[in-house]
Length: 464
View 1 (cartoon, rainbow, N blue to C red):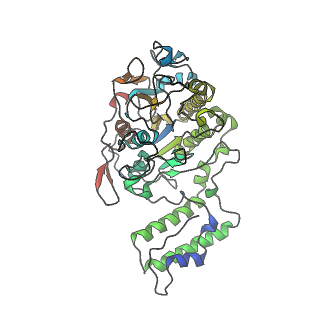
View 2 (view 1 turned 180 degrees about the horizontal axis):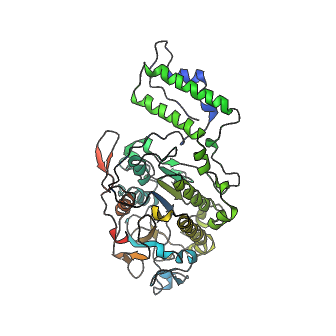
View 3 (view 1 turned 60 degrees about the horizontal axis):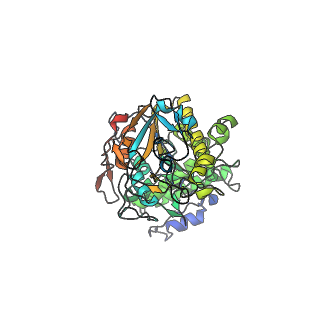
């Protein structure tokens, strides 16, 4: 439900703003628009004429995808390092990838692989914070860290919301299908706008696009609010706001007015509803991605970038009745999980996304970042799992100005430490901003007006 907050001001007839809204019944019929309404106007920024991407899709395999079974296999290492899986040739001459990636292997001419990414942090929360913000967590290796100072640097999604105006009626950064959390629903830091202020938070859509009944309820009018009544309520809201024009038009009033206008706009915008309507896709198109929650979120991400959203982040979510809660945090039964569901689901959804974007002429203007917060240990543990490893791991980028068919950086013989081409998260953030047409050191201002550069990293020019 949208809530309208009172700042303590009253009109000459002693009715405060909250009372006006209560009397007018302007709760929008009980609509649950939690994130939908919080879309203030974003600040436009000079692009500088560089960068080819209009949008970024962060294909987030949160939990820690392994480098050995994906982009950096070590076929000549001992079995306890390389694991039981072999390698296969890819579309790129000389590049071999894990055998559990057959679909992706056919697309490497469109993909740049980074084999020497480093956070030097082995905790989900703090390494994830560094990956999303480009800034190391204080202190490192801290699990269950909360999103608060001093670890309140904005996520790259929040930076995009700050630097780019909203795309039509949709926000310029959206996260699907859930926020990232540790056991106990403890959210990772680095997912929000931090010191930029809440108005720049990415819009988190909690949903299951694989559900046959999937829809964003907040985009539909409740049954008790027919269109005519909805129009009447909008008119009444405008009258209330006009009534307060002569009383107190402080910044917070203006912000909440913008929130309510945004909510009405979203509800009345057919284009917004159409962007979330997966029923507009053919069953065959949906099957190509796979029918999992994550895979259908990837398809939804494609629809959102078509609608003009600047950054869409897809978070891998847990799967009931699977080892390690169905995630990439494979402390036990690593090989079984990789073979049975993790790698097949990833291979199918990621390849479908790349192929779909290319077929629609969108890949050249959409940067796709294959992404995790760290990798896995070079050696297996006693439970047949691989543990957390932030000392070297692999990522991949495609589209949006990235040169495909190349590998940047290398790791040692066990994929344990970088040998050359080291990349830090701040460099990845700088590259993403650059591809979107923003200087990595673009000025951000915190809620006190202090200027801060978005990134202090270096653009990875070898892949552009």
